[in-house]
Length: 207
Image (tube, rainbow, N blue to C red; front, side, top):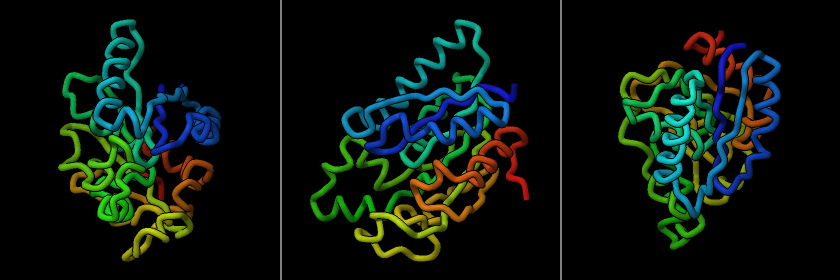
C-alpha cells in the first residue's frame, strides 16, 4: 500500500465529487479517505482546524501520517492545516487551487456577491501568504478553459475555466504540472490522477 491520502473537495461540492479520483488512487495502491466540510458556512480556516484535530486524534490512535490532496478550495484548506508544525504529514497535492488568490472570486466580491463564497471568501480572493515550511507541496493545474469563471473574469494566460494557471503558483512549490482538463474535470481526469499518484510516491511529477 502506497499510503493514506486524505482528499478534500472544493467550494459548494459534496464529498461524492471525490469518488473518481479516490477510485484511481485506490487502483494505484493508495488508501484514500474523504474529509467533508462545509466550505461556505464553516469556512476554510475553521475546516483546516477541524482537519488538524482529526489527524492528531488519528495519530494518537496509531494511524500513519497521511498525504493530503485537495481540489480547489480543498487544497487551500489542506495547506492552512499544514502550517501547524506539530502535524505529522506526508506530501500534499493541490488540484486547481488558487494559491495566489482567485481573480474570479475577487470579481464576485467587488460586485457585492462575496456571500456566494461564504466564510471562505477571504482566502479565495487573496490566497495564501506562503506555503507551510518544511512541507513538500505539488500542484496540478488545468488548462482546458471551460467553466463558469469565464463569465466572471477575463483570464490572462492559460486557465481551467475557473482558476488561471498563474494563480496556482507560489514560491517554494516542490512541483507543478499542467494537464488538459477543466476545473471540475481535474477530478475525473486520468492524467491528473496519475500526476497526483506520481507526486505522492516520489515528490515529483513524472515527465
